[in-house]
Length: 239
Ligand code: 6PG
Image 1 (cartoon, rainbow, N blue to C red):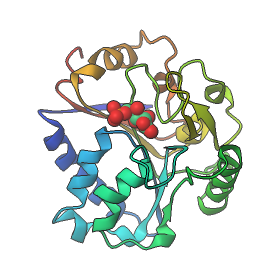
Image 2 (image 1 turned 180 degrees about the vertical axis):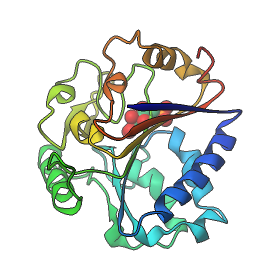
Image 3 (image 1 turned 30 degrees about the vertical axis):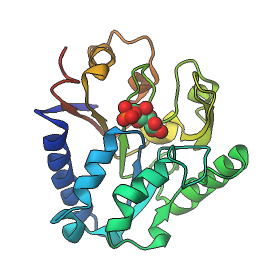
Image 4 (image 1 turned 90 degrees about the vertical axis):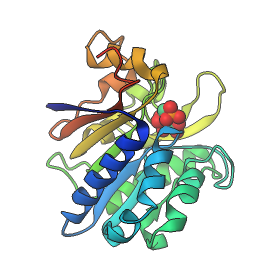
């Protein structure tokens, strides 16, 4: 497994470089490009960059099939919604058709929506050699507790590796979430962690240096694809 670390002086410079990489990756695809994105605050600066010239004009948006790594079980107009954040900072500013946007319906019954979302992914995505759906690129964040997507430490979903998506519960707030599982994430062609800020320096050091305590983010190891890290210097402080 390839493990590449890219470090930048600031989140803004990271976002500009990642936007260039994103444009290159998507433009290289001859057909649909299957992307899964995360929510939270880190991706916002990246989405804002993509929503600006030249990326809003130059990225091959029509190739893109956008999915989410996870979603909070709230309506799309709720301030907590990952889809809502993406819509505000990116989707409302680019030319992409509604059919290419595969949001998780946070307002729906969680267990039913997890099944529906799993079926959508299974139906729409190409299969890898293991006959399991394969994303072209999954963009992940890391929580200070080592979670990624909504795969929280010691959570039941973390170990239910047979499905594509399932229902999780935030360990502190109890908020229900729908998340991709480790198995589908690890089946991707490319996985990138985007991590910024000094509050992530400790967890990042533990995970990358290998003395992790089985954190969910440390379990992300693409079976055949590549894994890379996009870090600002604050998050990379202990590396
Ligand atoms: C979510 C994300 C989650 C996020 C991390 C980091 O729905 O919140 O999928 O896994 O990536 O919690 O969040 P920040 O970027 O806000 O630090």
